[in-house]
Amino acid sequence: MSSLLSQNQFSVLFALQKTHEGLTQREIAENAGLALGTVNAVVRECAALGYIVDRQLSSKGLEALQPYRVENAVIMAAGLSQRFAPISYEKPKGLLRVRGDVLIERQIKQLHEAGIMDISVVVGYKKEYFFYLAEKYGVEIVINDEYATRNNNGTLWAVRNRLANTYICSSDNYFTSNPFETYVYQSYYSAQFVEGTTDEWCIETAQNGLITGVEIGGEDSWIMLGHAYFDREFSKHFREILETVYTRPETVGKLWEEIFIDHLDVLPMVVRPYPEGLINEFDSLDELQGFDPLFIENVDSEVFDNIVEVLDTTRSEVGNFYPLKQGITNLSCHFSVGDEEYVYRYPGVGTDKMINRGAEQAALELASDLGLDSTFMHMDAKRGWKISRFIPEARNLDVSNPQELSNAMKMLRTLHHSDATLDRHFDFIDEGLRYESLLLQHGPIDLPGYQELRTKVLRLKEYADADGFPLVPGHNDFFHLNFLVESSNEMHLIDWEYAGMSDEANDFGTLTVCSELTEDQANQALEYYFGREASPRERRHFWSYVVFAGWCWYIWALVKEAEGDNVGEWLYIYYKHAVTYVDRLLSEYEDVSEVVAP
Image (cartoon, rainbow, N blue to C red):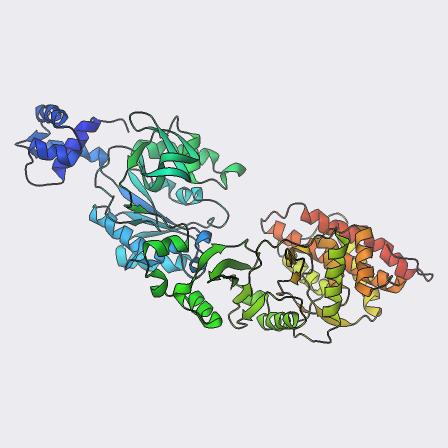
């Protein structure tokens, strides 16, 4: 801001504003953090300007402070907090109770204590959990619909027109004492000093405390930690920059802090140091447990209840949580009990409508009995959660390794020939037609060649059905990423959510398409499956399912693209597998002499 007061004048007037009693210059020096000689000179200046009368702040002095009055606060509470698994699966991190206080409520009350009543809480993930704050504390709830697709710049975008003299806060911070003030001189970012090496964001400053650079990682450094403050001038320029860069693809994944760092030349901000321990951020459950040893014992968590019951342990024995790579439909995290490592699978929102959990549980139990997946331990079919054994240093199937591909196909044959039955049924054409109905909701399908390909695929399906191959228990998501290979080379086939009765060739189609097997690799896989060279009839039938798999997932990809997602090269990969082989296979079925398939 274009300052009306010097930094020292502001500090002296602010010290006087905090008390209704007159202060001695020594008391002012202690409150303002200035040298006594400096205070003596500044008090004389302010008295001459009419800001101080009889050692007290005058009405003119109070008026001089008004440009520095904090107008409002924004609390960012939209994020997924994935690193805080599994507690964040059940409720937003900002609503956790730490040392007896709900994190966001403690922060709201601290803002109120500083006289800041205009508070916007920006929500996204599990937003409904925050709605009660509007009635309880008078905050305004702002919805960030982009919380899952953008970094926190989307949160400030949602409140860009509210930025003025504004505190920017995170809902999950815990301040041991109140850091908020009624008046603030200039924009700042809070910081604490870290001795030794750190991988945090380390701040470089000029002599006046102005931030001149930020590096990730450093040694013996002040690090960005906690809240920030935007003064009115900073807010104006930040809003202008945000509106300029927001639609750029490279902005999507940026923190607002990165946008600030990109524009340090026009966004002046100083570092605001705080003593060690005052600001607390928790990047993991173990960190929070270290800050509040009773947290795990007291937290209301069905996840912990499930773990304790299944593994016959106590909450105090459970730890070492960290998120694993998230799938399309579920959330998963690692945890330990003693020396044993496990995975907790938490079902994603709406998966109960997409997946037959009873069929999944039956398939998991079958896979365990057949020795195909020894990671499985327990599943609750009603609620969809699952506990599995964690395989350290596991890798995925290498389809270019003949021995591994052979082992995978023998595992598949074991499944198919188990004589088991599952309640679920899976058919590529039925699935593809269902996706097509969804695609038509976005308008007519006018892609060149689409109807011709569709007609050919459906005709090929009639021929394949007439082959009379059996329905068998299939994995139906059978490709390299769903195999875990241990260092001992033991293999586990995981993720049985789509398992059900399907044509014997179904899994071969998935493997060929989704693992992008070459024709030679696919034909070799068939030999491994049968334990001999496939007959022309078998090869023709199994390759038909490469077409069906490609066509089904091609339409799925078109739906995702129509919905705004980007599936990248997979759209073409799926299409290519359908269009490349359909004519050849139709000619084999329709040629009386029955030539050899690819």
